[in-house]
Length: 461
Image 1 (tube, rainbow, N blue to C red):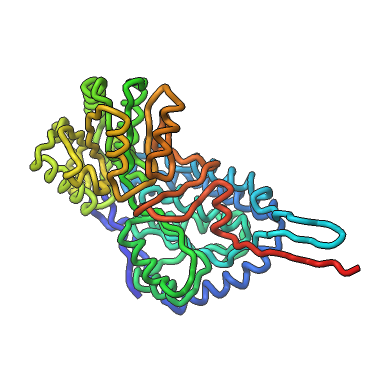
Image 2: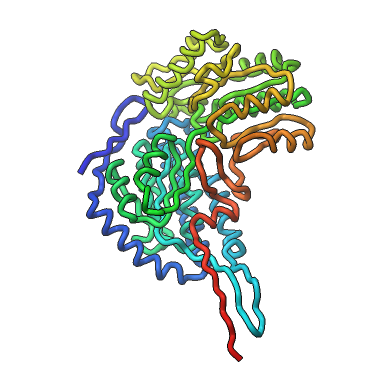
């Protein structure tokens, strides 16, 4: 067995450590979950949904501890209060729509035939969750999977391994059959082994492109369906008719919140040339008002990034861009945090950027954003599409028709108008290109965790 050590970005100390499960232990847990799933699937949908919501209640009862743990594990300031509001919103919506979403599609019910399509639970679902929003990202699949009648195995990121334990505690407190929801500590190699051995009936992964490729490689030939949410380089586009103040405030928050470590955070901004100077001036003022520091301090608005190596990658992208002619507008010396770790990173705004720079092409996942002036919608669309990723895009305009027309041309999973960095549980959460494949949340979210079965029944007279 190996030991997973969770290094806190606050001070570089070991915040928690856990021994990994052995392959034999994992196989036993999965086998038990598979047996329990059969009885669980026979329970009414309403009962399963109610139990999931009781687990959310139990998780909320732990929220004070959870918020502090998140700060220690990945650096998000305690002033923001954790994730329970969004967790409840998403789980509650999926519970509310479950009955209708899982209803059979009736083709015929006559004296001669019964023809219909039913949805059946897929079996055992593996959720591999990321560290940046450890509860929100996990619940996207956990809630619909359980409500649909599946068993769930959760492997959480080592950076936030306590989140998996908290979720297990919440489901146990809610009365979920013991062993139906399993939180495991698995090494990367053992995870690949279990995937390759066809241990799971659906795999949901949120994380890097490289890790997503590794999961696909492990699953090759097993025919196990996989849902992937991978990298992003989400753009914002500010048209000439935009509400400037609203655009600046929302887009900069979308770029900097959680130290830029958001799946659908804003990573690049294109502003019509008539608004460019004013936008940049207001953006700089906002960022200069941030306070970088200890996330346990309620005055802190920017905590450390989750790990030194993540901060080093952002530093490298900024340095490369500046060497190629970009202009940094934030004096990093004004943001100091002497905590003995390199995870603390000052926010940065770059202008005079272009798409030859990695900061405008590669995922940064940190508190930096490049801002470019554009002359037209066509130029903005070309730049927004000049990316290997496609998760969300944000358009700022007073013209809904224009937003719809532009949105149709953007290669992305979600088009926002006059907002960004938000996940609406009533809408399908999906991406294209190297952002991944599959869908979660909305009624379509139930399609991934169920399979279709057709019934064609001929009545003899």
